[in-house]
Image 1: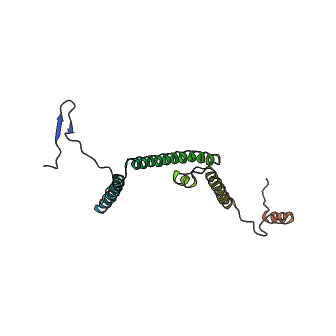
Image 2: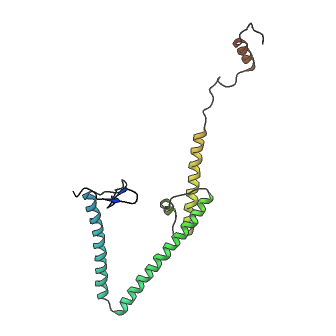
Image 3: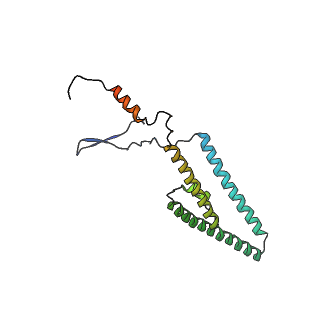
Length: 180
């Protein structure tokens, strides 16, 4: 009885509508095995535990400091965060510039590969992009040459001499008794 669906009669248009809509599972829905779930949980727990240990170590370190040392430590943490944010912004801007340089050469790259070429140093990034562009164009050129390359004609299989052509033409024609 639990598996049966309840049906409600609709009087207005004489159609039956299920009282509870059926939930259809999509075939794209990911199903995890117990081992996969355990691995995910273990990974998340290890990450959480490491964060907690780092927080405890920080608290322990701060408890041993006096007020001026605490203020200096907090200041240093903030300066480190600012430096990290500036570096992230610089990398973002350098990535945009590098993407522009590559687009001038009609080259598009995924972010993962572009991230390998971009550095915090503008000159190094420019050198990396130029080297990559040259290598990419050389590889494309070599592949195009390989694709369009044709084999050399065989000896004697090329253009025939005029006298041989006439002789072969005379040999190939059959006298026909019909008038054209």
